[in-house]
Amino acid sequence: MSENYPSDVKLNENQDGTVSFATEVVATIAGLAATEVDGVASMSSPSSGFADMFTRKNTRNFTKGVRIDLDGNKVTVDITIVVDYGSPVPDVARSIQENVKKAIETMSGLDVRSVDVHVSGISFEREQRANAELDEQHRKMLEKTAENTAEAGEAPAAEADQEAEEIVSAEEAAVEEAPCDDEEDTDDEEEEEDEEDVLEVLRDEENIEAD
Image 1: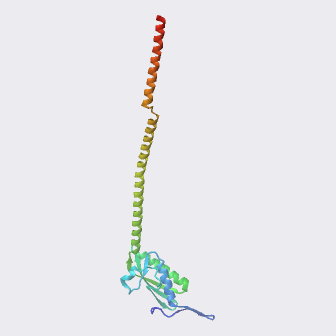
Image 2: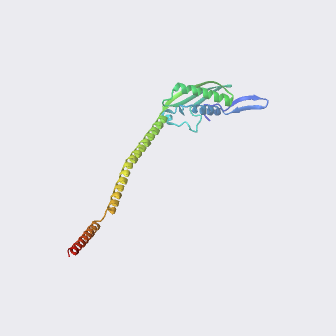
Image 3: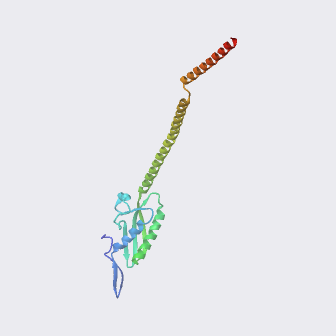
């Protein structure tokens, strides 16, 4: 247990007995209530220095950065925090004071005299994480655009190939349907032979009449 805390807090005493709890419980309540506030990056001990600016607020040491002073049934709370970059410090501090006071009084029954908030540093972790997410979204958009461009370029090429195949097929069909030269020559010869036969018959008839 931290040397900052008395051994325990006697909540009340009556004929049925007494109710008391470790003072560190109050510090734990205060620490958890403080870390619930948006804009609090982590808790920070006044003597821990610059390294605490990179400490995540889900640390298991819930009493870190919290000091309590008891006077009978009244408690004074000192809280040291690291805030996220871009968060308005006055608003964050006010929310911490309200949240801590409400949590302690509701859970312990103690009267919170004051909650003093100390800001020891600024964390850029949330901003860096947001920038990384934006970069990732931008990269995905570029990849999607490249894919769409490639698909758009492939479509006209495929259509051109299909048209060429249709033209070739039509030409081949026309060639197959066209008459062969040999067949045309044969037909011409047959026609000439028929004409010669007719002429010959006419000559014979003329000769017969002349006789």
